[in-house]
Image 1 (cartoon, rainbow, N blue to C red):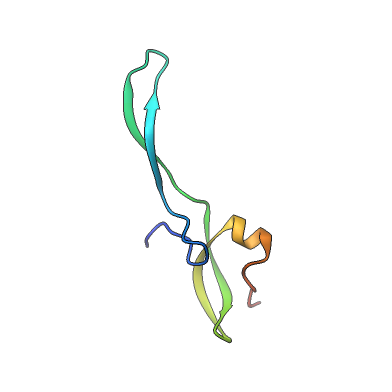
Image 2 (cartoon, rainbow, N blue to C red; image 1 turned 90 degrees about the horizontal axis):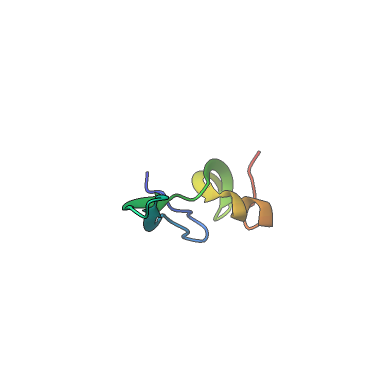
Length: 63
């Protein structure tokens, strides 16, 4: 599974972690994805959607 929202294409973001002593290491932030059953092109389908899209109503859930 790619860690990307299928609605807004939000994906993993990379950055640098800095400790208290300023030693630098790489890190990543992943989006909060949920696998939901949604209506896509008129039929129910399981897709990976970020919680921001779920809360804002960009996805019509198929229950």
